[in-house]
Amino acid sequence: MTEPLPTGATIGILGGGQLGRMLAVAAARLGLRSHIFEPGPNPPAGDVAHAVTTAPYEDEAALRAFAGSVDVITYEFENIPTSALDLLEHLRPIRPSREALRISQDRFSEKTFLCDLGLQTAPYAAVDDAASLSKAIAETGLPAILKTRRFGYDGKGQARLVSPDDAAQALKDMANAPAILEGFIDFTHEVSVIGARSAMGDIACFDPGENLHEGGILRTTTLPASLTPSQRSDAILLTANILNKLDYIGVMGVELFVTRQGLIVNEIAPRVHNSGHWTQNACAVDQFEQHIRAVAGWPLGDGRRFADVVMENLIGDDMGRVPALASEPGTALHLYGKADIKPGRKMGHVNRIKPRS
Ligand code: ATP
Ligand code: MG
Image (tube, rainbow, N blue to C red; front, top):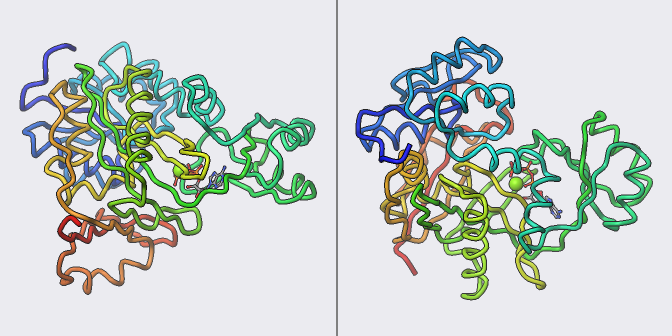
């Protein structure tokens, strides 16, 4: 696929959560259609898409029909089964590439890739059993965090180790899943860069945002982040470096720890990212449109930030605050249309805007 997709073309999106929903809205704004593939019933993205396929990722006939009805395939989450991608990649281009997905699906290969690029990560070691865990503790030191290599999100699949006595329980928490031990980083704060790379190889990065987590879940992203001018350019340059190395097409989130020794890469996400939701109300072209543009072979748009902004996630019972938020000045409300309110479930977010300082 070398020519930009014409309006009326269809973007296939694997996954039907809120990220898929906001991608579909961005596609529609550009005159493109979207087709959602999602195993679960009533996906949030389904409300705003041209078509929805409800089928498991193991359903080959459904995957083939989906591929036949779209012009390009993208995804809104990283944990898509390999077998589905093996089938789809012969039928339609997948953007971002399978290589980007493969690397970021596994925390061990992700860290190895980042270190090979010359970037700093937490000290890490693979853990499969009690013996490799005690060896890993010797390498990384304590405190440390044991994380599953795959399928982690919102801090799930993680256990903290303060003393060697915590090892047995931490291993038990992993339920024998392959894991990685990471030395604990003494950071001052966390930031992330949302970067985009087009099919032509152009790169545009949004201004880094400062992220606050509560209970392992992102709570707020604040712009501007507290960074020196040189830290800000470091963050953007290292993101561009990662995008180029992967020959990446689309939007990527790069999570960073800010320390006195410089920026340490926590993880990369080959998709639009929760910490980029602020772009919806503080930039002419937001992360969702930027991703759709890249995937559709269009030029990237203007992602300069024109306002200061705080994005706050609405999680679980925060939904009770919606009536008050709906009438709050300077506040843009984004709700995902999820029927069930559950603790820890991301239900929506607000962007609070102020003139740029
Ligand atoms: P998300 O889906 O929110 O990105 P995740 O499940 O992929 O989360 P991580 O990003 O690895 O998990 O970790 C979640 C948070 O835990 C980090 O943002 C950071 O606050 C803390 N954390 C993770 N790894 C480390 C580390 N090595 N040292 C210190 N803190 C850490
Ligand atoms: Mg993270």
